[in-house]
Image 1 (cartoon, rainbow, N blue to C red):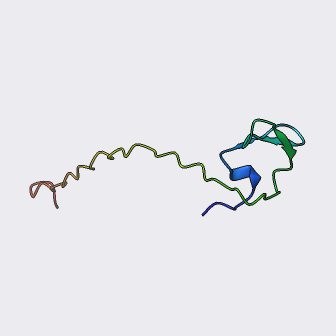
Image 2 (cartoon, rainbow, N blue to C red):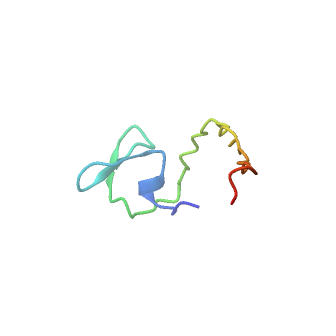
Amino acid sequence: MPEINCKSCRHFLNTEVLGQCRRYPTYQNRHANEYCGEYATNNVELPMVEKPKRQYIRKVQDATTTE
C-alpha cells in the first residue's frame, strides 16, 4: 500500500523542490510529504500478461554409454 501523501496522489505534479496540487483550478504549491485530506490514489490498471510456460525436457541417459 502506498503512503498517503501528496507524492503518491493523482492530483500532484512533482517538480524540483515543491510540487503542485492540481485538485482545484488554482494550483497550490505543496511539498511531496504533505497531506491535505483529499488524497486520491493513482489507480492505473496494468494489463495482465501471461508468462510463457516453461518446457521441461527430460534427459535420458543412454544405457550403452555407462561403463
